[in-house]
Length: 132
Image (cartoon, rainbow, N blue to C red; front, side, top):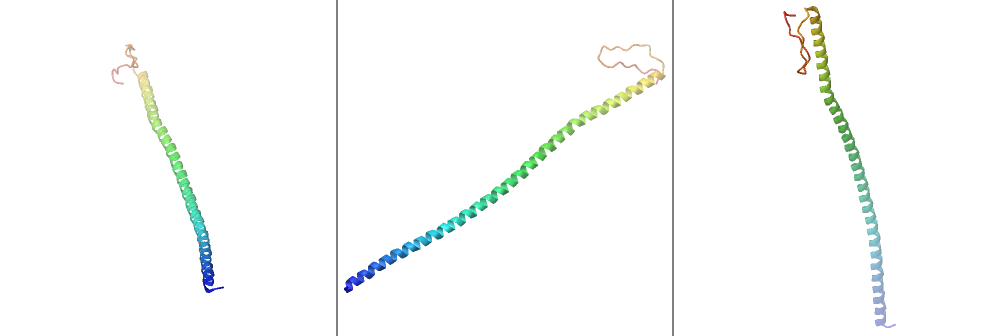
């Protein structure tokens, strides 16, 4: 072998070595990148799952609060509807007691000879004469 051929062989070997080294380096870089990409993907997926769990828990809490508010509102409406009814019943009881007292007082006094007219739609009452 001549010196020129020797240098040519060394040059070709160096080029092949550089190409092989470059390809090996590129393969190693790809493997590292794939490993980093996998780690990043898993990390993002774990964060996503954790965020979804937090959102689901928040949604459950909000739904529970909404149900409680609805039930509380329904109870408040029932109480508000019952108050006028109870007041009306109390007023009716007082009115019945007052009418009973009037009937009792009328029974002690002299009977009224006048007749009450029922043409106006109100209850017939007798005027008080000579006190009670």
